[in-house]
Length: 105
Image 1 (cartoon, rainbow, N blue to C red):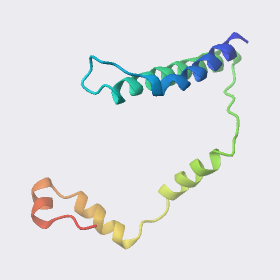
Image 2 (cartoon, rainbow, N blue to C red):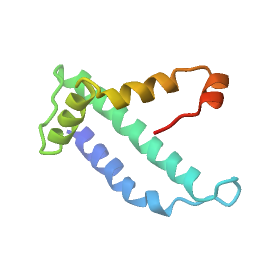
Image 3 (cartoon, helix red, strand yellow):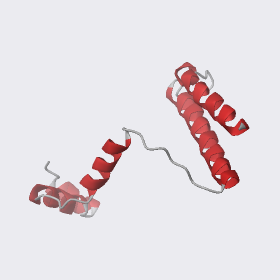
Image 4 (cartoon, rainbow, N blue to C red):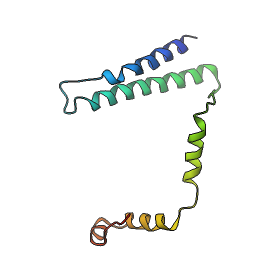
């Protein structure tokens, strides 16, 4: 399928992200790299949606990298400890009270 070839070229273009440089921007190093990375990501996302629409099925391959993502997702749903509750309460205070009381880690 021609989409697979286009996706491969987008992934190969990711190798050129470190070479992104622009003389006419305020941040000559980071902003061009972010722009290149976002264009590549947006292109891959569009190609993924097109591939899913043409095939009629959403196919996602499982990889070993899914395990850390699942662990992070489960970590967000665990009950917080008491110290974290205190920190969250301090961060929810209005800015004026936060400055008066101080946020202690």
